Length: 300
Length: 240
Image (cartoon, rainbow over all chains, first blue to last red; front, side, top):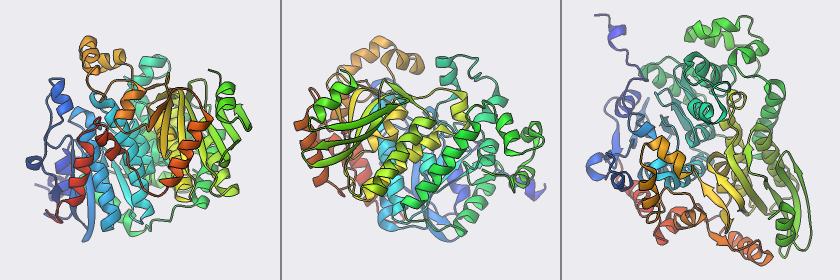
């Protein structure tokens, strides 16, 4: 057996617990509120739906390259990683704990469609609390890094949360957006967005597009080890800036400029051509390293 | 009630507010001095341009009027649903708006939002729910999704959802449910300068006390688990 092959583990296919285990230093993860000390959502039970003792999110502490970190990992296989009352409160607690303990980082393994409709009001308010708690952790000097590469991507309120983090590390398989393509198709019609056209969905919401546009900080292979290397490298070169007017002014200007330049486009192919990529049709075929090389020198 | 009627009632001492592309920006006089007035009208579906107009106005206020309170008027049907909007990462522009409101808070600007008609999911998250306190007019609609659509997506019978909505504030649309859950501070029977004055005093007094919505939701009986779970996570022994 070739060791390099034997050690490959897809992030996309792994469970939340498997991702955490492979991301952190071996054996360093200590779960907070493990299933034995927790309870499934009573709101799901009221609807005769099966719950999970961790309510779809694993939280705890551990080490990454020797440094202490806090980690939250959503389980996309449980109701699409959606945020309900308990699920949200665990994440809020972890982020508030980061303000107090000042770990080297909070790693946020997002795999979620957003609000859990069965607990819609609790979920929406919880996401608002997570938004403020992410910004509070960052204001306390703790980087919060989003890792997006699971089957549910980062959508709805969790798409907003991802963009509030210090950075997003993404794989090509990851997807990041606000409304899901299915929702847009249902409301606005199949001509607006054909959710079954997987290639189109990836050209609009996928990791390569977000990386070319500068909406995620790093693009990594769909491997747990690659996410580990990506987040370690990011943190090694990052000092969390104090929140301030200058930084947000710069973002404002960048977003306004981008909107003015690209507002009429409806497909990644069009934006990539406008970015100066000579062969936009080749982008979906490029491997990760070639795409990263292509991005060098492109404006965002 | 028209936006002008709402503005006249909230700010009898005067207001100078412009509306462009469903985005409200301007200033008004209150018993406590001038406030920035901003938000959306006509059930705006928030897109990049609207989010950036609001965030730009928040940044202008922080820069030019240190400490000036922010009064958000919320009437949003959610986020714009289009491929071109998602192509440019609409969640990123909404996050930027939320970050600007958060910066204003950190720099000492008290803020409150008043839902005048509709408050739905992404649009509500990006500014209404980022204010220190949210209020709603009595006839306001606050929701993630209406029950019929929710029944379709969750594959739970509509009748069953209607039945449960009568006893649980956890999922059903309604400003009153958000009050019980701690997401909305109070419902106003009608726009009122006196209630606005009270609310401004309240957010001034609570400036810097942090996000209290979990404990409010607990004390009102609507959200009975969240506060306790967060507390347990905060106090779980290190490395265990």
